[in-house]
Length: 274
Length: 306
Image (cartoon, rainbow over all chains, first blue to last red; front, side, top):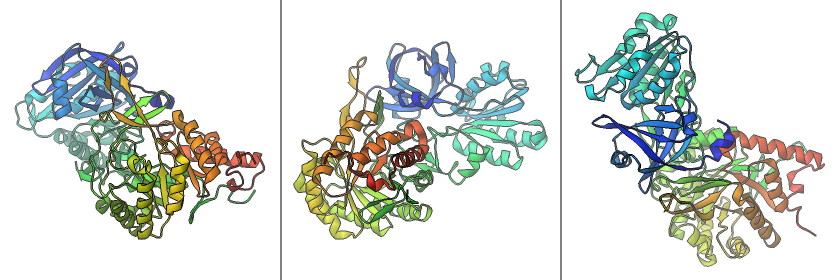
């Protein structure tokens, strides 16, 4: 996407084409938007919920001229969005930010919660490219594990699922099978790790990939306002998550490790815990 | 050509080049100010900081329009008590002048914040008396010569550092305000802040910004800002910093020719990233060489007849 397009990325108003309930707390919304339908895995859009808010959301899928986002009910804006139905009006700006670099070797995707959504989109891209595609996903409980059925045919081996309460798969965090895998296979058998999820998970994935010298890319999240790199609300270190990110590679993660999974800027620009 | 053709002065501030970061753009964290300084900005202006923390408005706070951006952030800031340490730290990591933008609800508040900011290490303060979207601070002061005079006098009494006043274009006669600011002791004037604006969506029949009204920046306002600088330069001797829609070196040179001693750049970062400062400085240098000028000082106000 050219820089000029970013600057002239005016709001488009569209209608929700479909709503799919993924689990009691998470829904997927599909709508028409030709520009966002050209997004690459890792990019995000700003979704306007009229009279309520405008929020950044990772792109979960594109098909023809439609785009899908997966949203967990976590606050006022998302609660309102969850009450919206097919045919309701929303606004869209985007796609914004950089994207994951597709690797054609042996890759591993590590997802936590709704972080699975952009990695599903990435997995679709990698499925026709990567030699080996493994997936580890973690959630609090069984019904919060997302997209397992869709991921299975894309991966070259069955995805590993973990739950904190042990209601499905392994009873542990997603980083535990990652640690085992890295210890067993290391950099000889893994070319790239992609991660998206709660930032404390991402931090742990980063520590482990550093220890085993495997390159990684992670999608980060911060409070966002402008989405186009000027307001400074989403800074991590010297980087703007909306414009320089949201995808950070190992080199950049090293530069921001004092903040990664630790602190972020709040609404008043003050540093607060993640 | 002298060895430093881009050098310019704003009162006692010496700038290596005339391109400064405009207030409100990035400018919260020391890391982002450092990045802009390292991208060869001649000075950086922080986001506006007040006495107390402010969360700002809910989104949408930014609307992208064809030739610019309308924003109503609502002055989010951590408050000067918290921000003072960031000012001190920023001073240790940047080599260019650090200008702290200050807002308040009363003359006393402006003075308190300005005092704390300069004690923490700010090289100058820029008084935001022109924010178009927060009530009782900003435009109300910047549109009223009497209030503005009180604010500037009170700030001048608390600090010996240069006091820059950022003017609003949303006035009947900007020259009258510029004269009042000069008489009250302003060391430099920034012209201009954003132009009051609105964006409405036809489908929902609603204003898009959560605050309804906001301020327009970007190329759409450049001719207006340029005229403001030209008008002020004709009547007022105080150094002017041109601001509004500068995206390329030609824009910057136009502002210098109109009478600005320096310029501020903000919205252009959305398109060109921090590299915009280097791009513009290179262009100005080439222009000076082509026109056989030794210093930008030779072209300040050159567009004025007689």
